[in-house]
Image (tube, rainbow, N blue to C red; front, side):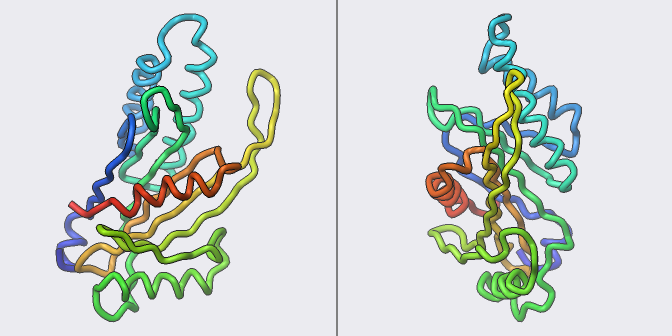
Length: 209
């Protein structure tokens, strides 16, 4: 894919997602929420005694849809189960806007594009910029940043403080100066290292279609 082709056709990342995930298009909020409602009923059940579980799970996914729509993401993946019977609250959004282009880069190699991005992050004050780290896998090379956000969560009238972990992976599109951003989010920030390892395994196994 050359730089001109990348502008005409948005680059598509293919992920190998373990377990059970729901894929929605956040650009159509109504359809996305209908898909979530149907998937939650299928997972939790439609019985009256499951209403609280349905409400909590749906609210969590609805927030992810709203955030993805606001960020102009073109794909959203919602994790229902990491393995049979193992629920894992994780969302993955993918962004490929034209403005994410490393125009000062010399050449279109991943090293050149991610190098310019790394320098830009080092000079920025964006949250998590100081955590920038280059990761190389068998299929992909990425620049990773992460940040922890404390948020107040209310369940059944009880408010507790949870740590939300957000992890960004910047991919260099082959043959272009464009980058694609894949962002993971989970309220399980207390187990940061375990979640980073899980997200890394998915990101480094991704490839461009």
